[in-house]
Structure formats: structure tokens, C-alpha cells
Image (cartoon, rainbow over the protein chains, first blue to last red):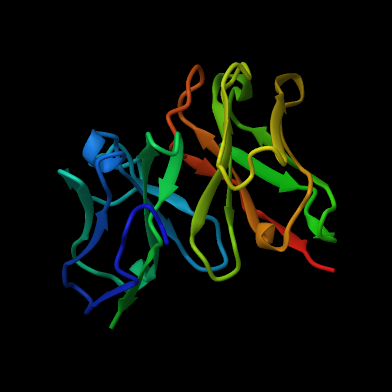
Length: 111
Length: 122
């Protein structure tokens, strides 16, 4: 049971828009801590996708965007492409646990 | 280019010990906090431990507290994870990851190593 809750899977056709939700609580996202998103192709290392809830590292296409509100955050991917198939993880800090926490991960399938 | 390369993994019996090493290059190692994150087979990511650039602040996940020790040698550009009293549930891929801050722990990770496998089994 992960501290941050993500849907196990989402899917969309090429060109469509999909969102991945990340629900936390008052000790993490709701306390104002930033949310970060990572993309992991199975068998490879995770890669930073969004930091501080809404910022993209250099090299990440603007098709990827993040938002945060209350105790939840979302990752949106527009103009879906085949290479977007991967696992996506949200992450934040939890004051009750005094450490970093991850969501369980969401598998994105491009139909 | 930032490079993080883990080594030291392998097969160990329950109750045994293992020491992981992460070699950093392409950046000023001492200026960044560093972390270990692990992933059990077929499971999600789990934060393990963090250390600031000067080693002044260290933190651990409850699941490893008292059994694992994180340390670093800035002269060698190396990060370590000493793992004792290993259990089957410690099995997984261990990643070294850089925190963009150096003087404090911000608990997010802007660069990752390729990971190293640790298997705890009799």
C-alpha cells in the first residue's frame, strides 16, 4: 500500500490526451510539499519528468505537464506517442514519515 | 554529463551483509545530496536513504533503519550503502540518485544510475 495513490493503468490512442492522478494526504501533498514525476521504461532506470509540481527539466517535451491542487496532483500527456508507453511514478515528501514517498506507479498503454 | 554507476550487488543469504557503491562523475560530487532508491521485482519505487553533501544530515526509511548505513567519500566521488541483517524483502534493484540540493535534503532526484541487483536468498 503506497502512501501516494495512483491508478494502476491508463491508456489512450496516439494523439490523444491522458492524465495520471496522484492522491496524497495532509502530511504530504496537502501539506504543501512539491510533487515530482518520473518515467520508467521497464528494465531501465527512472528519469525525472516533472519537478516541483509543474516544471519540466530541459529536454522534456512540453507535451508533458504537471499540476497540483489540495491533496492531489496530476500529470497530463498530450499528443500521445507510441514511445510514451512506460510506467509513471509520482513522488513527494511526507512529514509523518520524515522521508520521500512514491506512488505505486501507473502503466501507460498507447493503444 | 552526469554519470552515476552502482556496483557491489549480488546474491547474499538472509542475515548477511553487502556494501553498495555509487561512483559519480560529470558534476561536483560534494555539492550535491545523494540518495538510494530501490525497486523490488515487479514493484514500485521505494526511497531508502539520503545524505547531504557534507554528510551533516542523513535520513532512512523505517524499513531499513538500524540495518542500513549510508555514507560518502567526496574525495573519491563515491556514495555507499552498507546493508546488514539482510532480509528476503530487501531483494531488488538499488538505484543511486542525485538530489539537486547540496546543503539540505530536498528529497527529489534529478539524475539516476542504471541500478544494481541485490538478491537475498538462501
